[in-house]
Length: 422
Figure (tube, rainbow, N blue to C red):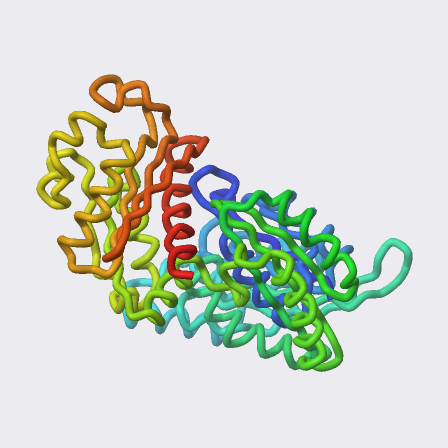
């Protein structure tokens, strides 16, 4: 089964709005064994939308349209689907009553254009929308292609607001699809590795995964991380899981400790898990990353069990007052130095009474024009990690713009933590 998703709305063709609904829909369809073959974004132009619908009907079994179900002039999805299929629209009296009741409950007068939302395509079944005013529609139809062959097509219209679309898909669309589609048993695994080039990972793993022709393999790279996604479909879930177990075991043997997760957990989750198993606590002192490391850690639920907090010591004054970095050290070596990274890690650990203290100091850009750090290159990063027995400091040169340098600095810090705990 092949699906196509059409996101409707001119706003998604601007730099200010992204189509995120298709990511959610793709995940839901994949869970049912349906592959998404095409994704299309179409503006509020009836000719373009009808053309996109015709294209989708020729090449996809399932067509899901999101957006364009509102009451305004540029909400054209219902009308365009009807025209593309040469079907009529009719006004559903029950939807009209529901719309009127919705406005009465809010003590508002319903504008006449809201009646558009009661228009239903001939033969379609309404999908109630508990979170909004626009109902969805479910339409099963038969089309004839240019070669004279008939094909069954399923067309689903969903509202654009994510809170409405997600609830409707989960409660109404997914169960209907499950009832119609043949049962499929799919196993999935995600292996994650940090700070390794994609080419290196592929060179070492492709001789292994290429032998598993029944496993779909995808490599994703970005933000200092490589992910290997494996998908296998078999007659039973047990067979699919066993097949992936065999593949993953071979990949793990090849990549060793470079793999930080075999079940899809993030690096932050793994760090907190390792801290919890060892009964350790962590504190951070961040300069150039401005709290980004703390944000990544505290994004994980229950991080407070092992993360005690820390400080954004952006200025030299705060480095001195909070982490007790000697002022003379800052004057002589500069804030971006291994000596200051060491003092920050030790200082935040002592200040918070944490088991471990980690620090990040560096130049994310632009270059520092004067003082002891002048002449040091943009991208120079020092990370310190202190425990009760020792302190280690590592230097990194991270290329890229300010955002990339800051993000990769936190990635290096987390990976340094992982290797130390491991």
